[in-house]
Image (cartoon, rainbow, N blue to C red; front, side, top):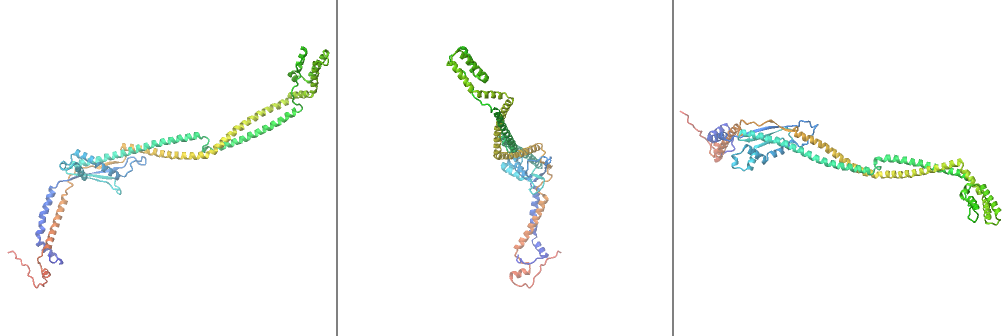
Length: 499
């Protein structure tokens, strides 16, 4: 084209079309037959599709909480990876005897990759709230395509059930093991708490008020018994004073011994032994002893002289008896006092008071030990409280953990039963794969339309390309532009009319 800047009108375009008509027609004779032949002889590819609904669990989650908490798209991704694995697809290929012709040139890995390309799983995204997904498979045989699609769908359903049961069982086993471990730890802590309470019984923090009350009671009792002891001791002093006042006229002395051995007659010795025996001194009065000694002296004087030893001894005894006259009088008075009922009553009272004092002293000693014991308990309570708080804190935490695990374990068991009874979330086939009636590929209408568009595009492209490459003169403007000379006149094209 010489003048690329010129403007064209409808007449110019018609002129170009007439001039380049064969460039426009030839692509139609080439592309249209090729398109028709492709549409007629191209291999027919069929597609079968299954619509699967994600059905929620039949028991409300308010009653039984499922242990499968992962999102549906995450589980579908995992299930798709499992179903489209080499092992599963090889089983499907062998089951339906797929890709017989391709197996001659391709290895098993390539056949599996080919089948993976022919499978399409439309999984909802995280932002998508769809409760369903689709599984599609493409192939040459419509019956096999439908059967393979249904088989893949059943694999998805089986894998979902297996995955949910496996996850529920794994959760239950894990929680059961954790619960057993927590229970053992809790039992050990309960045993430690029990041994601690037995070991330090009476020093526990909750027994502080009881210990203080008992200590106060013991102190009051100690004070009361002390007062009783003081009162008993005062009474004892008072009675002792009364007894002393009663015994003041008499003074205790040793008994007078008047017997001695000497040479005398048998009658004299008998009389002397009787008179000098301690029992006689204690029982005989002063007058009776004096009378006995006087009679014995008269008998001895009648027989012997005054210088006779027996006479001298008897006189000496009589003189001694006379010199101790007052002592014997006091002893007689003391003996009379002891026979006094008042004296004996005071003695009995004194004896009872002594017993009362001993009893009070024993009680004070026992109460004092108890007071010291309870004081030690009260003093040890703060340290026991700290130890007990640490032990109970660990026990409480372990118990809360055990209760939480127990509750989760029960829920996990219920969820496991829910999955085994197939009451949980399930995949339900809404639209099963059917034998396709027409091929998915190629689309004849689309192929023909594409062929027509390609023909028109190629024809116009060839016309434009040939026109751009043409350097011929077609009007005066082209001549003036190339030669730089002004055209004076032009001869129009003369065509012969038909006769």
